[in-house]
Length: 162
Image 1 (cartoon, helix red, strand yellow):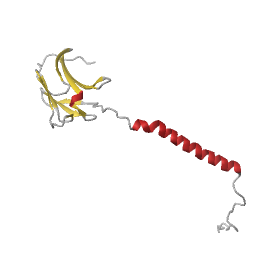
Image 2 (tube, rainbow, N blue to C red):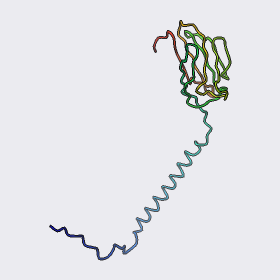
Image 3 (tube, rainbow, N blue to C red):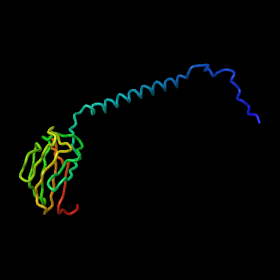
Image 4 (cartoon, rainbow, N blue to C red):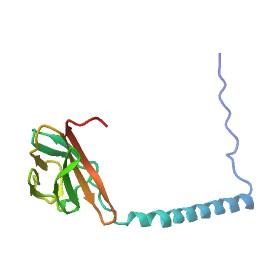
């Protein structure tokens, strides 16, 4: 069986006349509308790119290495220690507070910047010396001019699950 080949066109397609004025007007209007839309998007969104936004150290993950050492395992962003404080709680009673700036020794609670860069970073650690009885909690707070919020928390001991 033989398959017939398609026949070649005698002449390639050539437009005999230009595009109608309505089509030209529509294309020009669409292009101008697209350019105006892009400019409006730039006016709305570009200024937000240049605003100085405060870095947030959230979430700070704390893990126990030993019964008295609490390591900072990970930090969302490296934040200066001058913007942080930490509190130690036992049975919902405040035992000790550190900072701002975060650092130093306060009785049963101390903080050490493992690499003295002045930032809360993985490898830094807290030393706590509390008894084995009771519900204990360490909270790290970031202090900003407009607000204060908890960026890390570790709870251990005889706490009831919440």
